[in-house]
Amino acid sequence: MNDTKLCPPERNALKDFFDSAKGIEWTESSTWLDPYESHCSWYGVECSETNNTIKLELPNNGLSGTLSNKIAILSLLEVLDLSDNDIKGSIPTEIGLLFHLTYIRLRYNSFIGNETNFGNLQHLELIQLHGNRLSGSIPKLNLTFSDTSSFVTDC
Image (spheres, rainbow, N blue to C red):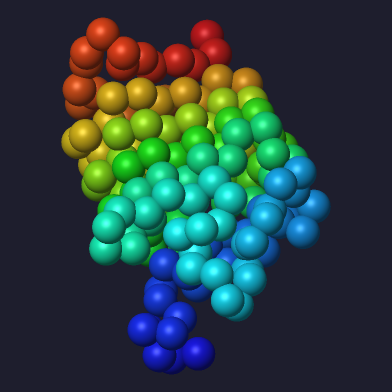
């Protein structure tokens, strides 16, 4: 559908995320894809007052498949927590377009590769990638260090 009022681009991006991460098999997916429910009421999704997705938190929820590159459409996303699942493939380089991200938790999945771009994430306070099969190096990160910030990886 091309009507952005009836079907906002963020809803379409989240639907694509749901499909690529095999949402039908998730432990909890209540209201996901319900045509009568706003994407802001979907399990694990939190929105701002303007209905922009600011948090996507689905840890330990049986996600598998892959992480869609359309995640970049969630341009105001601040928190991405998909830890303790079984998401495969590479982390899309488009994740580097999510300038508002402060927390990324992708630990304990089955991500592979070395082409991910985290370098443009100027507000990042926490990134957890351990428990995956990533190789290579991560570009220099300008983490905003505070008492709660951390960078964790497998050594």
